[in-house]
Length: 464
Figure 1 (cartoon, rainbow, N blue to C red):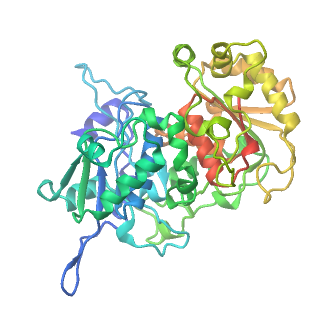
Figure 2 (cartoon, one colour; figure 1 turned 45 degrees about the vertical axis):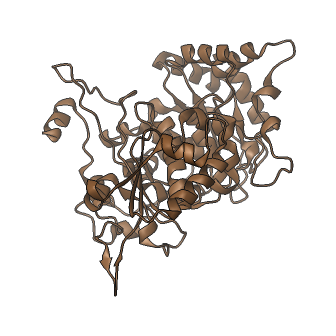
Figure 3 (cartoon, rainbow, N blue to C red; figure 1 turned 90 degrees about the horizontal axis):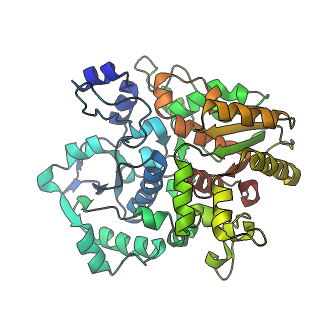
């Protein structure tokens, strides 16, 4: 029935990716040992955020993966349901909505999607993330121990003032000491979006940034496939080795039995795309949202705050990257904070062109990585939800400055890839040699954390 409704609405159903997830090597029944059953310990976040866009959900999924790792438990990854910003119409003729369910491995690989927690795959399968479908199989309701969020917060003495590092330490200790194999946290998210979107999240960066969740993060084969096909608009050079993969797709039922093993995941730590400047141009409903943010005096979102002096540790180390464009330093003389917030949240086309000039003028050779041949910035990719007319006008403005310019509108994507276009865009922005984003945006914040954790220098990240 679900497939019939999906077909009626034109939704992709991702059959190969779902089968790929079912066959993850950790999806095996517990083994009976000499005296006991060797059973993995799972952690399910039943009430993790939903109803918001992918990037708000993604911020939380990554931190949940990290908490499961600290708790010595296997993270249970859900499918993503785009309730707020569906990529395809999802309303039936009777007015009801039929949710599009996107499997995690259509978006990401690595620890959050059940991938290895080590560089060489020698980590324990019992610690690797499992799908919610597998959780439902091995953890029937009668075997699940429920941890009520409010009660646990009271027990752990955490509240809306506790920073992310302390929150993680206290929760991880509690979860490690629980003997139950199947633990479900219910009643709300551990990492609330108000925590993630604020400076209180920054305290976890020194440990989180070097732990497996980010260290071994990888884009899904579907994303790598889209990048491979569209690489010609990102660079005039040959397809890099990092994007070379075995065909047919490792998801395909017709692929050789060893094709998954031979596929090399696309990691953000691969050398950047030389000469490429990535731009995040947020439009759409952000015009009104920017007004609300400015009126409320909000700061930049989450990891975009790295480098702000008020939140920097007393002794700055390499684990605390100093982004140069924090909001305070970008408030002009005799300009109100409100006006500055609006200018950086909703920049005009003229302001964007000027900012791009400034970035190109200040870009040093080989800025993104020591592994890349020095090359001046000469090509732009615009990730945007703006109206086509606006994109064409901005493109023309930048072309007049001598740039080769391409945007989200130029991508050639299959139906499944269209469902995850936001992740395709993010993968380009992470791979770009330099990047300019919207400090108030969670998409930009996710790009920032992946760039920094993968070794991109802080000076290659900028804000409007």
